Length: 61
Image (cartoon, rainbow, N blue to C red):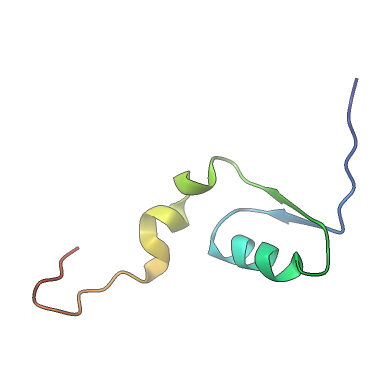
């Protein structure tokens, strides 16, 4: 027996762009987000979204 779901928007990918789109669109629309793995297992999570930086002499990668 199959189950059907209906959404206004389908987002494929849970990277930074997919998650930001889901957050923004969910205020007014129903969203389905499809990811190939757990959200904390994606490339964006491991790359830290490119926001990691050494800003102080005590900082390191």
